[in-house]
Image (tube, rainbow, N blue to C red; front, side, top):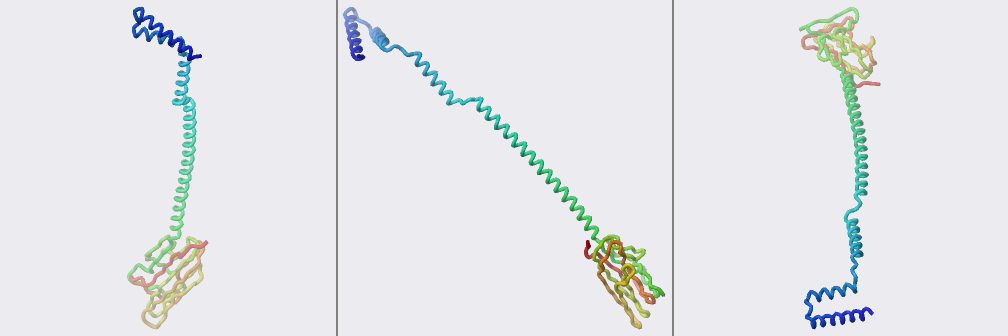
Length: 257
C-alpha cells in the first residue's frame, strides 16, 4: 500500500513539474521545496519525541558521569569520623605506653638507687697500724688490755673506731679479720682476736732473744652490733715502728639474711 502511495506521489510530482515547465517552469529551489512539502505530508515531524529521548539520554549520561554528591559526602564524612576515632584510640594507647615506660624508668631509677645504697652498705673494710710514732714498746701488763690501732690506713664504712680499737658490725654477714704481731724477746709477743669478749684466735711467738713475728686470721659470722677487737695478753710485749709491723684488718666478705 505504501509503495502504491509513493508511486502516485511521484507521478503527481512528475505531472506537476511537466506542467510547470510547460507553463514557464519552476526553478530548482521551488522543485526542492515541493518535494520537501510532499515528503513532509507523508512523514510528519516527530520533534517532541526526539527532544524527550535526547533529554532522557542526557539525564542518563549525567547520572553515569556524576554520581550522587550527597552520598559521596556522607561516605567521606563517615570515613573522616572513623579516622578521628582511630587517631584518638592511638593517642590513648601511646599515652598509656608512655606512662607505663615512665613508671618503669622511675622504678628502675629507684631500684638503682636502692642497689647503690645497698652496695654502699656492703662496702665495709678497714686496716690500721698500732702506732704513729717512730718506735714504741707496749707491755708487759699484769692484765689483758685492748690494743688501739690508731694509725688508720683504710676505714670504709667507718665501722672501726681508732679511739677504742673496736670494730662494730653494721650488718649481719661473714667477715674476715687478720692481725700481725711483732716484738723483741724477751718476753714473748702475743695478741688475741676477740669477738664479744670471747677469744677466737691467737697470734703468739716466743724465743729467748731476737725478733718475734706472728700472725693469724679468722672468718666470723657477725650479727648487727657484734664487736671485734684485739687484746694483748698479760705478761707479753710488742714493739712497733714506722714500718707498722703490728696491724689489725677486717672486711665484709658477704652479707647474710
